[in-house]
Length: 92
Image 1 (tube, rainbow, N blue to C red):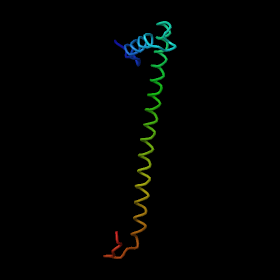
Image 2: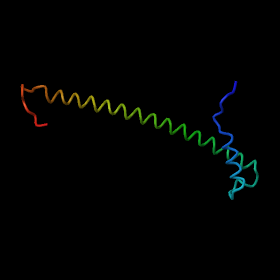
Image 3: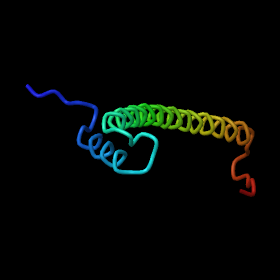
Image 4: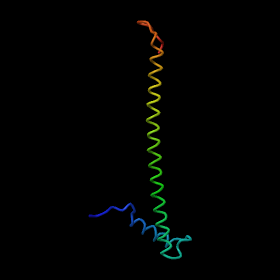
């Protein structure tokens, strides 16, 4: 049985090699570059999880707001038209 990892190891190794070949403070050894690549990958996963949670909360809030507005509009319409006479024109 194969287990799925939440880390893309190929991407981590490519990032480590790019760090090692580049001009930055983490390129003095490959092990330092690899540690930095893992840090970046873990930070990206945390960021993506936070963004997914935030998006889900915004979606829930938007749906709840739509329901509240819809209910308020319906109640307002009922109150506005409750004393209407037959064939009365309201201008809307």
